[in-house]
Image (cartoon, rainbow, N blue to C red; front, side):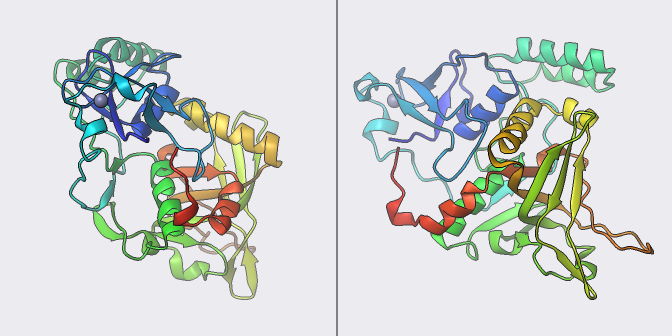
Length: 317
Ligand SMILES: [Zn+2]
């Protein structure tokens, strides 16, 4: 049985499996994190499946499960009640920026904060004093349906696509509520000039390679249209931006795995506007991201998975 939320030891902060995954890859939970059931009076130990896998697909995704069903307390509603009570079905919310204290948990506020401060001092980060004062306050807890990394949203997009309800599934992003169908746009044969003001999650198959300076270069394999020309958009992930990114270990592991196992063939998602130079002899299209939370790169297996899966055949792990 898949359990959606858990607690860290000595903490009353409920973590979604997706957030646990992020904190683990930001190297804030240690190598072997322990989780407990969030049920009333329940101390059952939980494990987080797929925690250490850099890749995510429809079937490979983080979720909590118990070691043994009998570990749960008789009062535990997670196991013995109706499962996790259904939340009010508001839209998913994608936050464009993380809160300053996002990479700390209540239980680990001091060590995590200290580590962040140590890191930011190395980097000369001017935000350090406000992070220190944030430690004195209980951090605002992230809500499970609030997402900060595009990858979390892509996971929901894939699930809605599989379930064929993209047009009905609401999502709030950049302060506006729309649907997953309207937000996610494939670049293929769209007119580039019509979309220079369209901030959307643009996606498509792409080829990926590492650059000499420790960054990455992506080129879509399907083009935008521009007059008679077909323009394949490109994107560069600079090494210095990756080094400053808290979840860099996950990003690098994902990208390096795609290069090693798929020769760089991948599916890329980016929340951005397509950019074209105003008057270049040779037109081209690029995507620029200033926040690496706004891109996601997946294995081509997700395309196969979407073709061959349906809601009925998805087994619960
Ligand atoms: Zn329990």
